[in-house]
Every structure is written in C-alpha cells, then in structure tokens.
Length: 137
Image 1: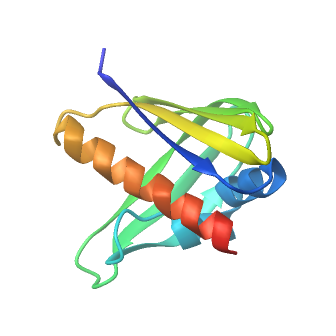
Image 2 (image 1 turned 30 degrees about the vertical axis):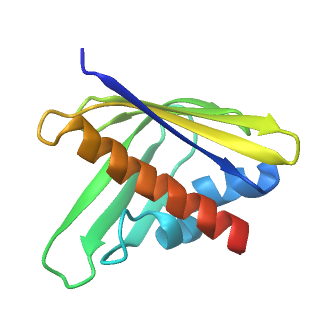
C-alpha cells in the first residue's frame, strides 16, 4: 500500500464554475501544469464511472512529454471524483462547499520514484494553478 498524500486549496468561486473548470478539457489545458515551463497541449475527459481521461503533459521546449490518465471509479457531481491512474494508484478529489467558496481536497497514493515532498509540491503547484485560473477567469 502506497503512502497517501493530501493537498488542498480553497477556491473563491461558485461550485458550478469550480466543477466545470476542473472537468472540461479546454479549461484543464489552461491550468494543468506544475510550472510555467510545462503545459497540457491536449486533454480528453469522459467523466463517468468507467470513463477515462488523458492529459498530455509536456515541457514547452519539446524536450519531454507524457500522458497522465486513468479510469473513473466514482463521480458525484459537485462533490467527489475518484479514479485509478494508469499505474494502478488511486486518487480522490473532494469538493466541499464553504459558503461562497469551495475547498478542494485531493488525496493520492504516492509513487516510488520521487520523494514524498517533491510529489506533494508538484501536485500542490497544479492545484494552486487551478485555484488561480478559476478565480481569475
């Protein structure tokens, strides 16, 4: 059993917008990167139990790219998404209403190649990009 890492951010936007920006490919492509030298040139998302998603993540200089994808295990609109990544690790995202904001809590099983700290920082950076993109668009 892999260690579970939990990250979170409070997004100062309505739940409908948070959900839409989290799940719609054209929005995912705008926020899904951990640093400014990376981007997501393509994204597909079949948001239903048993459906799949694939986000192509690439260095902007063209030096490296990979597909991040998985299969949905649970989809509860405006509340929760759970999926299994292609490598078998589990991820759960909870969307919790807090007045006019939404707390997004993401728990994921760590992989064994990078340090826990590096994984937490990378996933938190992506979540922070999501927060900033959602609040400012």
